[in-house]
Image (cartoon, rainbow, N blue to C red; front, side, top):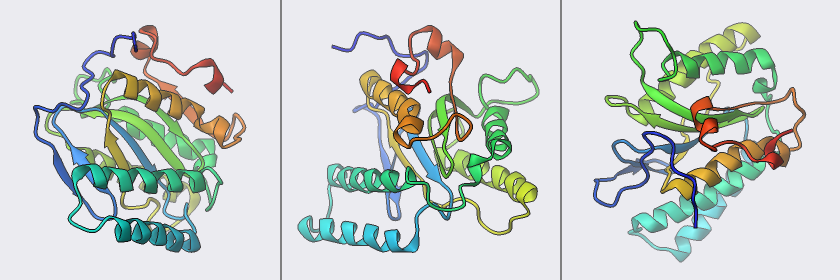
Amino acid sequence: MFHLDPPPNFQGLRPDVDIDISGRNLPHWRQAGATYFVTFRLGDSIPAGKQKELKDIREEWISSNPEPHTPEQQEEISRLTAMQIEKWLDMGFGHCVLRDPANRDSLIKTFQFFDDSQSNPDITPRHEIGAWVIMPNHVHLLVRPLAGWALSKLLQSWKRHSAMEINRRTSREGNLWMTESYNRIVRDPQHLWRCLQYIGNNPTKANLGGTEYSKWVKPEWETLGWKFDEASKT
C-alpha cells in the first residue's frame, strides 16, 4: 500500500466530477481542480518518417477497435501513442535547441512567472507546478491549473512566450513547438509518485550528461518526501 501523504492541494481523478474530453490526434481529459502529467515537444523532434510510422500504429489499432470508442479505449490509444513518441524523443531527433542552457532558462522563467510560488503581490498566480524536466527536445511536468485557467491556455502561453525568446536568441523563425501536447489527469497519489519518478529518471534513460537537461521539484513537495529517488540523481 502507498503510504506517502499527497502534496497540499493535490486532487486526483474524481469519479463524482464531470470530465470533458476533446482533442484531435490525442484525447484530452479535463477536470476542474485536477493535476496533470503533461508532455510537450519541439516541432522538429519527430522526423517525417516516424510520423508515418505513428499513423500506421494508430490505423492498425483502430482497425481492431472500430468506432465508436469508449473513453477507456481513447485513453489506451493515447497511452500507446505517447509511449512510442517518448521512445523517439529520447533518441534526440531534431535540432534540440533545449540542449542549450540559455534556452532552457528562458522556459524556466516562463514557468516561474505565473507560478503560485512566485512572491510578487502584483501578479496573480495561474498554476502550481510540482516538478519538471526540460530535455533537449521535449518537456515533462506536473501542473495544477488554478481557478480561471484552463490547461490549454497555460500551454499556449508557455509555448508562445518561450518561442519568442528562444527564436530571438537563436535567430530562428517560425513555429518552435508542436501544437498538440500529451496530457493526462493524475489518478491518485501512487500515480503521482510514478509520474514524478518518470520525470526524474528521464535524463538517465536518455543517456544525457548533466549539462544537457534541467529538472526541478517544488521544495515544499521535497520536504514531504515527494522527491526524485536516488536512481534519478545524475
